[in-house]
Length: 311
Image 1 (spheres, rainbow, N blue to C red):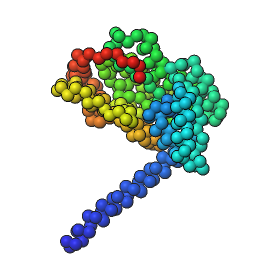
Image 2: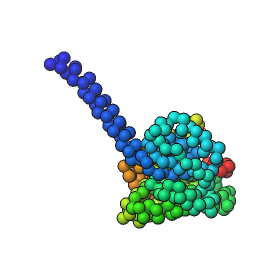
Image 3: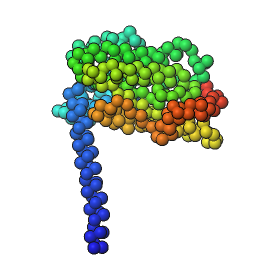
Image 4: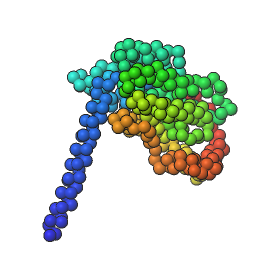
């Protein structure tokens, strides 16, 4: 009996490991089949997240349209994708110069893509511009530029491609947003406003296009950190604000966000919130205990921040 019990545990662990491996392989193959041969537009493909999304979906066999503001960086991304992919299982990406803050060129880009492929199956709205500083020190011109890049640009491209999806009764639009689309943090007024506006637009759009079988998804991480820069630990002085702020700014790696975007496309999820427990709790506290939330956030106003250059 004792020998049987000793053998049972390793066999059980081995069986569980085998099931997990099978599940991962099935999920991987399912992910590829979900995007294979699909025409997919990725905005700001030259950003950290954009590159990872391009890698994941290119490997999955999607027909990529990679948009970015720098032709050199787009070409570099193109070379990186081509060098590691199996040409018999992937498609050559199309490169398009696009600055979403320049609204006048967005319609032309949409027409170019539709003329080339005839349709767009999946749109990944990824572009984002950040700014940090006291509201009274940020110019109205910069406020407008943030709104153009983070709100008017994405919705203009979405509106240009949406009629094609509606007429075909298929398609998916993914907005990569941010925690600040759900709650505001001091010294980020313009950025938070643009993210609130974008989230509001796509939440409304989701209900409008459901009858046409067009899926609208939002993926909201707390903060997408860079590859090489570790999260700032900041001043270790004990305070509720500093603890709260450090937790909010501990970002998610671009690889993890890209994989979540793939899962969102595959499962046609409507909303994903990528965060550790502290930011998740903050969203609920903001909803059910607003006065307490405002008191905590107000502590951060005492921290004097200079206005850095636009990110």
